[in-house]
Length: 115
Image (cartoon, rainbow, N blue to C red; front, side, top):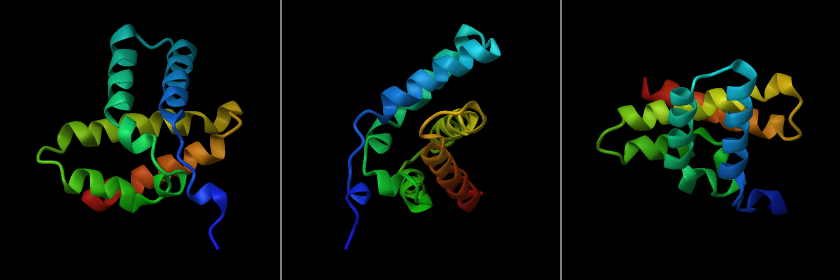
């Protein structure tokens, strides 16, 4: 029997990650262009990020993105940006840092498969 969390759809994850990106930018003194690129990367992955929470932590979900894209360099960059933003939460005491880190690891594994 599947747990309820396995089928939950997270419709606010994109907003959460955007807020994390802004907090990171302030904390690290990132310039405006960098934050703009991070926002664009996050927004480009909105459909995936707002999907089933259980699928987000599976590398196959992320592999399927670039498997169907004709041009993957931008997608790969977007995935790297999102992974680095999520990894940043680990040492910052974010309440869902474990979940964010699991997503980041899934993204990194998918990128390793691509390489």
